[in-house]
Length: 344
Image (cartoon, rainbow, N blue to C red; front, top):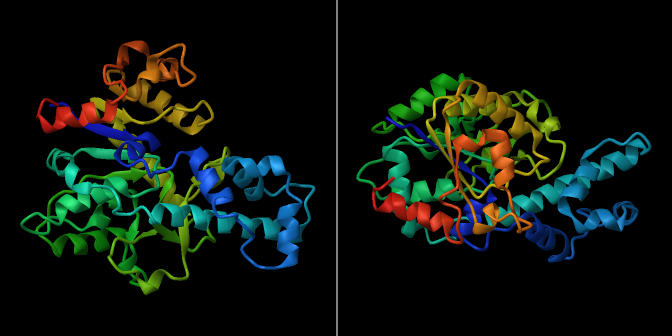
C-alpha cells in the first residue's frame, strides 16, 4: 500500500484563492497598502523607523530580518524599539491572513477533504494560513457525527488546544480527553513547520507551550498571548530552538520517512531555505525510494523561464525520484481532478 503525504507551499493557497498573497504582494499590503506607521504614536518610534534605510522598507523579508536581529552597533533602547516594530509587523501579517479565513469557496473541495481524512493523508506545510484546515473543517462539519476535534490535527507535534490552558495535565492526557468527547476517528496530522496564525504562545521562553485555537469565538484565555509564526526571514534558526517547534519538525520527518509518495504543491524550493534542504537530504539517506511528485506551473520545468526550479528538485531528491508530469499551467486543478475521479 502506498503511503501518500502532502507538502504544501504558498502556491497551494494561491491556487485555491487568488487573494492569498505572495511575499511580494504581502510586502505591498503590509508596508505600503496601509501606509504603515509605527505601532505607538510616539516621535521616538517614528524617528527610529525613519532612521532605517529605505532600501530595507521595500521588502518585508529584509525589514523583518533587520528588526529581528540584535546588531552590535545599536544601543539597547533602539533594540527595544526595533522589537516593538517587529512585533507590530508580525501582528499585521497575521491579521492579513486572518481576514482571509473562510473566504474561499470551500464547498468545491469536499472530495479533497474526504480523500485526505479517509486515506489518512498527513500534511507537511510551510504555510501559516489555515486554508487546508478550513477545507477539512468544512467537510467535517457536514459529516453525520463529530469524528474528531479540529485541534487534534496538530496534536502529534505537541500543540495544545487553547481551551486546555491553565489545566495541569500533560499533553497525552489532554489529547485522550479530547478523543473521548467524540466518536473517535484518527484525523490527518498537519505539521506546520513555520507555525500558524491560529497558534499562540507567551513569547518569552523556548519551552513555553504553544496553543491552537479553532473555536468560532475567541477564547479569552488567549488575549495575553502573541501569534506563533516564523516570519519570512533568512535566519529561521532563531525560531527552531523552541521545544515544541523542534517536535513538530521531528514528527514531520518521521512521517516523511514512512511515505512512499510525496506530493509537493506550490513550493519553489528556494536555495535560501537551508533547513529544508538539509532535512530532505537526510530523509533521502533513509527513504531512498521516495517518489516525489512536483505540482507546479509549466515554468517550473522550462529552462528559459526565470521560475525554472526543476534543477533544484533534482539536486535535492535526485532525477530518478522526481516526477514532473503535473507541472502545467493548471497543475493543482489537474491534481485535484485525479483525486475527484478516484484515479489517484
